[in-house]
Image (cartoon, rainbow, N blue to C red; front, side, top):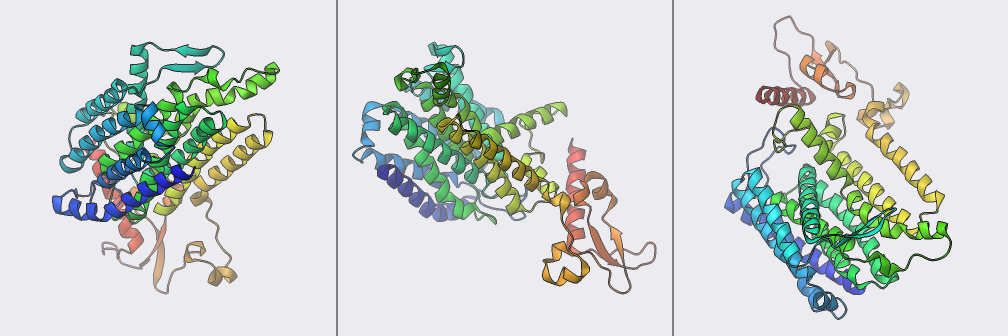
Amino acid sequence: MREYLLTLCITAAVTYLLTGPVRKFAIVAGAMPEIRARDVHREPTPRLGGIAMFFGLCAGLLVADHLTNLNEVFEKSNEPRALLSGAALIWLIGVLDDKFEIDALIKLGGQMIAAGVMVMQGLTILWLPIPLVGTVALTQWQGTLLTVALVVITINAVNFVDGLDGLAAGMVCIASAAFFMYAYRIWYSYGIEAAAPATLFAAILMGMCLGFLPHNMHPARIFMGDSGSMLIGLVLAAGAISITGQVDPDVMKLFSGSERNAVHQMVPVYIPLVMPLTIIAIPAADLVLAIVRRTWRGQSPFAADRGHLHHRLLEIGHSHSRAVLIMYFWSALIGFGALAYSVNAASMWIVLGVVFLSAIGLLLLLLPRFTPRAPRWAESFVPPRYRRPTAAPGEILVSAPAAVAVSAAPSERVAETVPAREPGVPRTLHGSTALSERTARLRTQERERA
């Protein structure tokens, strides 16, 4: 565990220290695209944060190769080299996209090639534990296709969720933390050395995200770009492939005792099928919804829009920081819930705890629709957002513009204070009105493009 933690800290330190110089390089190189209609930030921000994350990955692998215990991972397995080869290729494609914005189909082809490079070096799915069937050995073509599909889906799921400051890095960090605990338990408790590469990948991925997050939290000073989002997506997929298709379930010797005990003990075998899905559950759901939404409109599945989950949270009234924290909460609930269930599947308290936390998560999602209003006598003791709107002498309360009132949710319909005026006199705009006007204008432009 000490060597894993040392690798994590070295990776985080290298990523953190290199992000500042990389930001200056991105500004000089002109990797600061103009703000698009779907963007949330209001000022051009440099990309190429994936450069620092890639060198953090290299530093983590280099340090692990020189440690006493982790060196055995490199001697007994070729998976770390396969990961580095695929990561270098996908990172190069991401850097080119951050600077020149290459075509989506070219990126998709590069993702498939990177996955194929890892398969050629041994990082592939060899067998699958199928419930009620047992362990099923896969042919070479079946394993290759399944590996490439998992890599491409994970990369694009992480790429799609990278829309708010600190969102993708934080969610992947939470997912990799849950995955690290699961893989370490398989390696340490059952003594299965084949789980060591996945444990190492998860530790390095946590370090990459933790080192980049201080620069990427709202307001972000630099974005990871596709060079970072595709990179961490590939590392996440590599760990899932390693633990799913390389660890033989029969080595765990779980078939002992009564039939009921055998069923409970088989949970850690079937969890590899579920854990890779739980750690990308939120990004994968966003990916599926985006494809369905764009196809239904007659658009390309790769066409960008403002319909992602994080955009919806902003539209219902959540602030930027609160939307990110809510996404963190759901990622942690799904990932660590699956982890807890794999440890003790027979405990009813785990199920009740997950249900209770899910209810809290739903309450947080709907919080803007139920914003409480303090009574008049207590308004001086609460923040301004909980006070009732009042009109100054000579002013009247009017609703927000009709365009916003029709398209927005009820919680988005704000009241604003404007001076009383004659018909035809231009209305004085306040900050909230100007923001709403801008939002309505952007939505009108999107509808015109559609």
